[in-house]
Image 1 (spheres, rainbow, N blue to C red):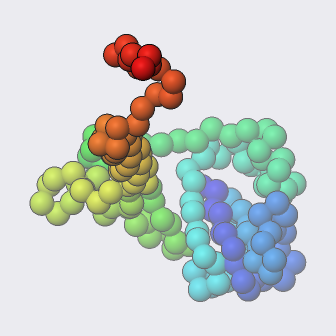
Image 2: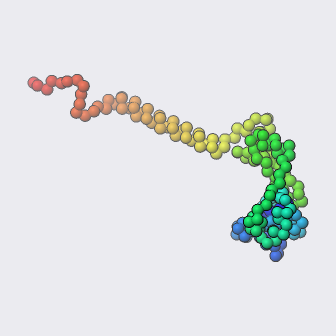
Image 3: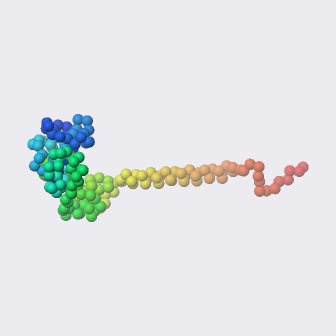
Length: 177
């Protein structure tokens, strides 16, 4: 496992951080199993994520820096459990929030929000909360309706006021007196 600790406000001394993830006073770190320093990471870090990797991929590499591990590449291992399969079958993506003591909390990442088990609400129906794309469609329909109504109003007013074309008439007139 590789353990990532994101946006830590307090951290042990002489621990190398991931420079590209530094946000002001917040630092982020990565460690392999067995190399995580004793520290209350849960209290001082915003997120802790553990990723299963093949041990040979990271042996000794993380000590040379997180960037070196990325350059070498590493193989992720993943064995979805039945809860994950149910989440994916409902259209979601499996996620786990992991603490340093390896207690994992499962969540299902769906279009509109995270769910506890799958992309359905408690009654087994697809959630009806509007997503961002729903708002875009609703806005486009309202805008199109306003344009159409404006055009129809223009035609009605034009016909009612009898707007005439200047200089021409279909009925011949006798101008001789």
